[in-house]
Image (cartoon, rainbow, N blue to C red; front, top):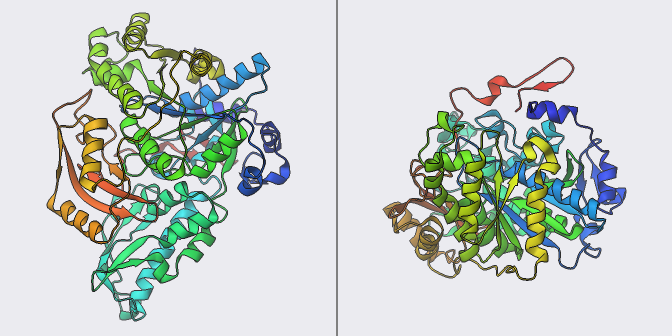
Length: 569
């Protein structure tokens, strides 16, 4: 079957008016603020003041094995599964509803290496072009709030520096939603005296900013404003902390975000309600959509599917240890997405040979999947289903090998073809998931965290490294050790850790594929996102401002005289 490009499928799809999607959620037009014909913001307080749709609403986390150049399709499977579940609800006539809660794409990857990020094939959220580009302006608002704080800091220093901010101890960086390595490290304030105070500065990509993390972890506007005020921005000349509230910044920052904080309502190709809101990267931030969107989705549906970025060692770990810890959310099950191609790549097969049957490489790559299964089941106490995202090159023997290997470990496996067939291609997975909940003999969720946040920073890092990644130990640089001592002195050490590392390996070395053992996790630097409520741990060579590849996706994207976009994915 020849499947058109993602953007061609999206542009040929028939979208329901947003008012019809609102009716699906049993809401009224007064509960939303329309953004055109097919997008809307949800008025959260009004919605949450009403009774929940289901007393035992289920929250399902969709995660994956470590990403590879072969692709895994986690978001695509999440969307297709939501459509499949609603197909089954309609067939059964049980009156139940499934929603999906996803992250917004960042312009950096859209114009960089990845292209569009709103699902793929016949499992997409729409309108695809809007979601991948400016959408409802949330990311612009987050960047503006971030840079307002930066401007207030530098203006305070210029205007006499009543707080005695040490220009050499300003932690707050500017942000832009684009991959731009040129801005990683800059010097600002050059020129005349009236042009500001010269100091070293830099930019992070917006999705790695603390404002993005705060935005996604806040429970409401009041909580958002308080968290913004708690941002540690600098030290004074006596090495005492300066917070955003000391600069009276939190009110204005919250004002810029008052509309953005409302979750965005859109739809899948098959008309499933989708809340797309917030988008931190999982390799350099906590990698989950907003708490507000997840709560609203769960409030309005019987089943809510949400994803966490990259593999289970990053997104799922942070979903459990950060998002759930700080919000009170608790998942009922986890789905781990894998592809035959990616498993063969983890087993040593070359990228140009992945379409060829290779049972040996596949078997060698399975330990990567097994590690993620063990993490979800044994560390976090979640029932697990493995979803094989099917490609036409997969052979029956390869699929059967994965099935038997997983079933030997007591894990159910389902084949998905949602990219090619939409919701119809996800019904096997949907049935497997429902049976997991409906069969009383199946174990229920015994959700727990992987560590106690009151432990020392080093112990928390070591626990994640050893229990989740499989490391032998950690090595903390002298710089990071000094940062840890500083946080201990400031009583800012009793927070969960957000480890930033490569997404391509369980380790901090992108070249160590499969299930590496006996490696050391190298901790390069430490910082605190006190407003978000976690400690950032920089490992290996990971950085908070990516660069563009030699031939970025932007070279293929165009728009004609009628406004018709091509090349987006």
